[in-house]
Length: 414
Image (cartoon, rainbow, N blue to C red; front, side, top):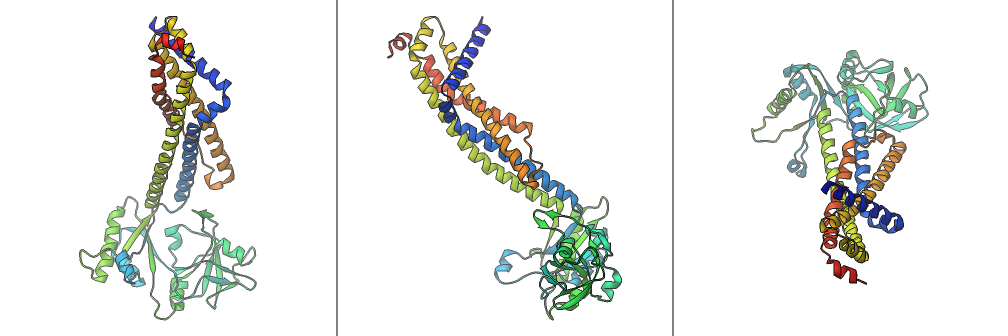
């Protein structure tokens, strides 16, 4: 009997809500606007973040994921005093000599004083100019598609040869086979010995816009007295302890500088895993901000639902009086209005879900980097769960008001 009455109240509340929505479609839509915006924002933000995360994960997987990059680090206090830490080629040689548990190690330098301009006979472009040695291609896994990479002999003899990225080849209009042609860097001519494999973009950065030259050659062309700023790339042996290797590198650099125990480290380490953690931290921050905005929107939507339900109770006072006079219990009335508020909230939630889904689909079609945008099941359940909670919480006060109405006074209501 109780179950029958409960089901009856649920059905009555559902039919009344659907009838009210159909009769006042615009008013219902405006009432649920806050919920629509909130749910649409949740779905869109989650889908965009999913797409962005998928894209970043794929690009990081394409990188040498176990590679560690060591670069100089200057604490803020020192930087404010105009001081700057750098790593020299002697630092690299010391690290290579004393840190042995690595698969491979290489050094990379950016020449100071040569600029980034590269010229051919017909065009000029700018690119990242790096000096490195033969095993760079094995550490970073960048191989040539045409010609060859820099050899130990090139570095030892300071040959003026370069390996170009595909973007540089295209910008300089060097044709399909640039090997053997010459380009000019800092007023000096270099012979092209190879072209790297095309790697595409990473976080919007063109990975094919580079020029590799022998490490010793670029050092010899740097301005006299100019400080070196070398980066050390290494790959640990299989199963090697990266933290332990980093500690060894720090110890070598600190010993070379004679730093005290409490002095800050002059180097920092970068790995794909740390880049991924940094990105996850950014995603968490964006999600928190979006969550706060969505929370405000849902609060506004909930107040709208409560307001329209209070109006509905007032408009239907005589109807409530008649139903009570015919024997309906306060519990029945309460449940009926509560279900009505719930249906109204879910109406807004479903519209918001469709809008958010559509926006995510449109964005993934327009922005290639977000092609992996998708709406996970948990986001749908979370949105509908919040919508249900909004309907119950903000529909409770109007439902209680309707349930407590005196039937005689309700029947007298004009």
